[in-house]
Amino acid sequence: MKRVALVEDEELILQGLRYLIDWEALDMQVIHMAHNGREALDCIEREPVDLIVTDVEMPEMDGIALIRAVREQSARTRCLILSGADDFEYARSALKLDVEDYILKPIDEVHLTQALVNAAQHLDEIDAQKNERADDKITWLKFLSGKMEPRERQRFCLELPELHTGQQIYTAIMRMDLDTLGEASGIEHIKRVLRGMIPDVYVIHLTAEAMVLFLYCTEDKDEEWAKKLLSDFQDALESDQGIMSFITIGAAVGSCEALPDSYRMAYHLQRYRILSGYGQCLTEEHIRSRRASDIAIDQARLRKSILNKDQDDALQYLEDLFIGHLQSEVDVDVPYQIVLKIVMLLQDIKVEYQIDQASETQGLSEMIEKIYRARDIFALRTMLMLEITAIITQLHAEKSQYTPVVRQIMREVQENYKENMNLKMLSYKYHMNTSYLGQIFQKEVGCTFNQFLSNTKIEKARELILHTNLKINDIAQEVGYPDTSYFYRKFKQYYGVSPASLRSMKKY
Image (cartoon, rainbow, N blue to C red; front, side):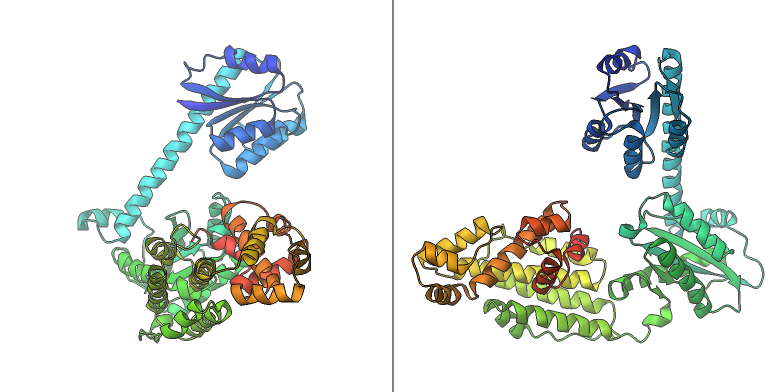
């Protein structure tokens, strides 16, 4: 049963739409009734629909703006427009937004019913095409993984472009950064650009973020030629569309049936995205000289820095370790070795010092999952930085014995960090000498009052960045930083990454 939203600012017409049509006979159910686009959008975001029947002229958000907002989220949803005026501009806007029908008031029941039937049929066609594409992708994966029976593989290869005498095929995998890809419909544009620059290419859109490219060429074309061709396309895609990608190229093969061998090499090279990041195009030659040697980690130094609550030294050591190995020609397994060893060290510290797992620290299984989902080496480094910072914060909170006045000041900071607080105001409140109170606070807490206040604000900002959709500027204001530039500097100084970078990494 297809779900429907009715949107009309006039209550009489809205109720009329509800009862004018035999929705059940059309295998439809009205689940939302709204009086303007804003109200409808809120409902649809909570519970999506298959069909929208909307008036054009409404307060707060009109029908065109509503459909435009819906289109940003879904190209599948079918939309019908109702209007009391035969306005060409409305009709033209509706056409651009892939609207099913434009129905003039007073509403004709037969016309509306037929329009709903047509929209439902179109929706079924869209879903059928989607299922067909999914089946096709499954077949491709079966072929490329080498799991097809010989006879089935031969039949499958007959459907590919013919490989002529003196030709060969390079297989490439292009993985796109979903954060820069935008609308899925942009894939078709990417394919057109690709075929415009490289005519003899066969493209399969295998997953939401990955395409497989079969590059047909003469036997005299080597890997460097293929890399140059695909790198030029990659650069054009980034400069013109802002889409970041990572491309790997398998060895050339002389038959379609050997394509799985080339694909496996390209797939293996995809692991090197963790070291190279997006914007690179790699061949097997690129990794032949990389070392797989074991990495020595100064665990004693890192442990000492953490237990001494020396956050600056711990994070600097992490920075030196990662950047040093990123710049050296190491094998792809090296960063995983580094991170796993450090994660186990941090886990030992948490167990030994009974750090509460309900705090901002992460469990072992959660961290291991994030390791293998990380987009690049910088995401791995940031994950460890955040974990070390959280451990040090817990060590401060749980292992220090504070005098009542220091404990009260810390509580006030936690509750009133947004306000313009300073030690002089607090010393007056507690009838103490400002200098003496500052000395006590630093001795017990391990940092100055101003540093503690700044750290508290930055930690609160981190929580908002990771757990809300507030804009970074609004978060800066929320935690008491009216100067956003200054907030950015303080945040990066504390966590090693900018607020925007942290938010982009939160899913990892």
